[in-house]
Amino acid sequence: MADFDETDLQLTLTNQVNNLTVGPAPFEAIVREGGRIRRRRYATRAALTLGLAGAMVSGLILVQSAAGRPSPTAPTGPGPAANVPAASTGPAGAGPTGGGGTGGGTGPTQSPATKVDFRPAQDLSGVPNDVLAATVKGRASGVEGQVLVWLPPQYDDPAYRGRTFPVIELLPGFPGSPSVWFGAMQASEQLKGLITDHGSQPFILVAPQTSLSSTEDPGCVDVPGKVKAETWLTQDVPQLVLDNFRADPAAERWSVAGYSAGAHCATRLGIGHPDRFHAVAGFSGFNDPATEPTSAAAKDPELRKSASPLNMLRSAAQPPHVSLYEAAAAHDGLEDAKALKAAATSPTTVTVVENTASHSIHSWRGMVSDALRWLSQQTPEQR
Image (cartoon, rainbow, N blue to C red; front, side):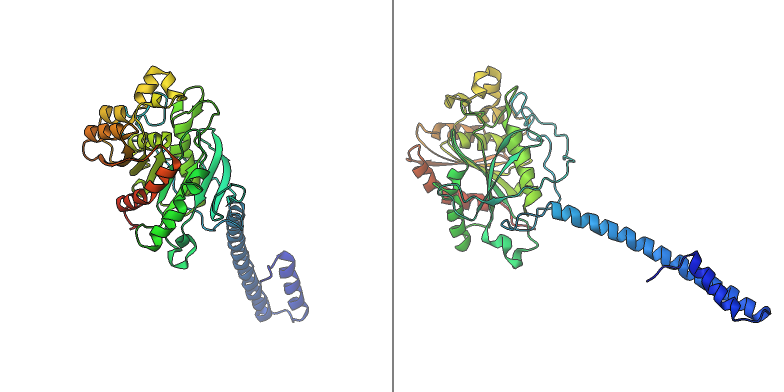
């Protein structure tokens, strides 16, 4: 609709004056016509102003959406607007000195969503083509590392369009690559089969890089002056997943799993961050960080003590609401798992699975299916 300005009004009035014989009635008509035009002009301007404002808002939304739109090779549909707590609200005293699990959370972060261009991990040997990869730098930790993500077949199913999915964060040993979980461990292939057989609900699988130094294992601890590994795994990685995928933000729908040093990490992160992880699965884990010869945490006596999952349980002001699944063999994590079970009090639960497996990828691969079933049982369906 065209707008009316002052020139339009003047021309209209002039044309009408030239065709009139001056008198009371025609003059009144001109006044009425001028008033009508002015009213149309004000109404039109108001409509255009509102329309322009709406267009500007819509354009801003479109620009923001375009800026955060995933790559054409990545699934569409980012996660819900949600934030990961900036610090754990887990059991007081449970976290390491200088770490992110010291209790007393500061509430949700306020930073804008970080959109990342995840692409198929085609250059990773042995990793299925349906695994996505990206290298990111954590805002809270400053850590730069690789993150692999696998989305279940239901993710792009129209029947699940309005659904969010539970998440399992997968931690490798040291030194180890996150690709091991999808390659040699076959986690996504095993989960896919379980979903088909109704043995598990569909999960998003996320494997972040945990080997953040070529010489030392940070042991998923914020090591003062070195690396904020705990912050990376409990804040940056979860936030990355929530920002880019339809992941459920509720802690009861998040789990963490690991093998060897990764099992140690998974257990201590679950105990220290029940506000982020509700269930834990560990294969051949240990409690004392010094069990890992290259442990950075073990070099500091206080950090070594506070980073032990067993000490975290024993010193917790309140038992964390977390469920642990510990699969291990004698002299390879079994004794540590039993110690956790003995120290646990409600609502903490510990399921110990004794086996005769060797400390190897081949053995841990055989434990994945049972652990996934168990994690699914601990994870409530979306309400």
